[in-house]
Amino acid sequence: MIDTPNYADALRILGCKDGRLVKVIGFAAEAERTGWALAGGTRLTSSLRDMRDGVVAYGEDVVRRMPELKGGVDRFTRTQRLAAAHAAIVVAAWFEALGEAKLPFTLDQLDRGERISHGVPTAERYARLVAGLLLERLPTPEPHVPYGETRAAVERAYARMSEALTGYVGGLSVWDELAVEDQLLLPRVLSEAPTAHALRIYDEDYRSLALDSHEFGVRSLVTERPPPATALSRVAWLLAELAPPRVGDRPMIHQVRMAANALDQPLLLAGKLPEDVYLPLLGEGYLSPRCRVAELTRESSPAERSWWDRQRLLPDPEAFLVGHLTSLRATQAPLLVLGEPGSGKTKLTEVLAARLARSEFLPFRVELRAVRARADVSGQIEQAVGEVLGEEVPYADLVAAGDGAMPVILLDGFDELVQGGLNRYDYLERVREFQARRPGSGARSR
Image 1 (cartoon, helix red, strand yellow):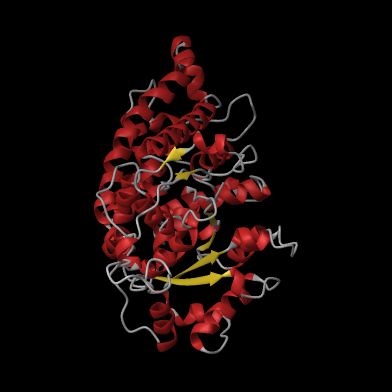
Image 2: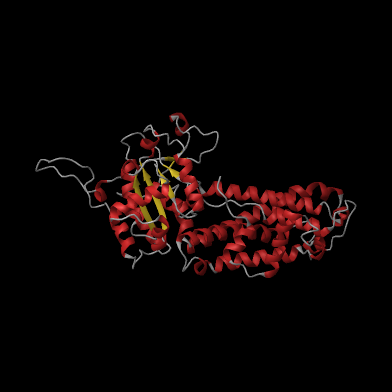
């Protein structure tokens, strides 16, 4: 699992300036840590209607300002903002639907609720409600997950939010004023009516985000069959839609990008060929691979072919790669590419590095067989890049020289490293630690 943003995270990432909204969410977060009284609960003015109006208005503002929010920032910041924007529209859709649902009470009636026999002040109950509605992590679109599954995860989030509101209402004086029939039906009414409407609103807002942010559109392409192409050419085309090729790189970074461009090299290395035999270049003859994709859990068995047979076959691996590179997951966990010897894993890293070389990403391809096997990950990157530059440069300096370009570390030869008798079975964990220390490093291994 990766850490996805909750609504409070979204406001922080997007720089929300609605003071009332920020204040009530901040109070709820503090109350979770220290308790209601220490957080200053007696000073909290609770108003579900005000919160609803603020959340809906901010969701509309995010959709309207999306071009501005994702412009003029580096790739990592834009990835964070896109995930935050998605969280904002998920919550806004539910609150909008809540305000339009036919319930046996109004939001104003809830706001006028008084203390009841449970002895829990309304403000404290309200703080718990805010935590249940706005401090839980929310689903985010991912390239290996079809839109329908993301939508189902959003629906589950809505069900959880409805449960939180049902619990809140059950502790207010308005509950005792409801007919017994309404009390019995309320959980079902809150679960079904706002949720169905909220999903329709979410669909519309998601389409609006996709129009302004091609990253969302690319992720929906993953489940469609692509037109024929060679050498991951659609990767370059799709990335060019997200951001134009970079110009004015520093000389050091220009060298790194040039070294990654291997498309004009022979597809296969061979000796002297007969006069009538021609081997295509890598950019001409490399065919996009067919592959399956899965998110590993403790129950996964990736060493078993039968397990892979049950995983999703990707119709469009190129859209998946672009969707992954622009997702939160790419900034938090490595992508492990598995395949039989000779299946083309090395060529994949070569072609992908070449396609990324003319984008807002900065590829560092590391042949693990050619660097110090016992070095840490940053040391191996520095040695590999040093072969290109003629000197080893600290990894932090390389990233700084990239001027905001997202580093993508392509580690080639992972299987040979762990099988080479050097006791590097912890190497993948070291890669994870390297990425955790440097968010946005985009480490990959194969």
